[in-house]
Length: 404
Image (cartoon, rainbow, N blue to C red):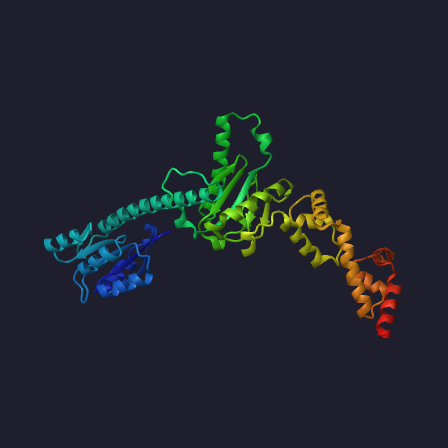
């Protein structure tokens, strides 16, 4: 990410020259604006809000360069300032030093000297940026530990300060974990976990995301994406050696404790996942009242109710929710009390009854509309569920309507 610079000089030709004659992008610098006196510079600094460096002349109308430097020292101490003066006068340099300005150049400025100074400032800023990011990530990790592990910390407990920080949490597990570790030494096992964490972190970093990870058990790693959350999705979770449960929306760290419980419960279904990633939906109520595995069947039912009039198979629905067909059939019967075929036939028969009562379609047309390709099979299923053939059912309901 480039550092942002503001150029300030009451001579427009100098502003344009500094702005346009130097390939700033090669030095990771973006000239975001120019100003023609200190007062305008203050206004633009307040407007932009993220200026890293100000290059300013000393002698300017309204607010001069030293007054501008004094304002920055008080209100924006993180902004670096370079003062350029056409006056070889010690008093200006002395005042600049007193204001904390470490770089004071004389006009006409040698471009090489200016670039040398700016390069040094950018290097210092980059070191500070990296250090600040490391401290921030450490604090985030500390807050996550408190949420999911209630672990004592080696640093002061300030996790409550990060309760409203937004994150994208997901959990990963190593495929065939028991087979992979059975012959490993303690040292090799430690190396395996380090490689696992690096794999996730570096893969996300290549895509522009920053993350922190903690191991909540031997084969469960919780990762929280902390930057660019609006661009993150389960599509970014492609790890050949891993399977995972992904939360489908950003949450705050303060909500992580409950969300992690649900993610942890959903890891039970990972061995049945063909695609490697299970998406675990979340809403405001489920953040505080996790539904465990029910979301799998809820998602299956939503899909079935949308497509039951087509030639839908259990295999198809199992693929949609990323579990094996056998496990889907067992779980579906356990959660709904009906087999997949019973559930489908119930939906189709109910739809057929409505069409028989309310439309003039003949029975074979109705059979096709509700998902049956064989007329005889439709009649047999309908009779099994209602006790009547479709024609008999239509006659009975029609007579009832006429009598009423």
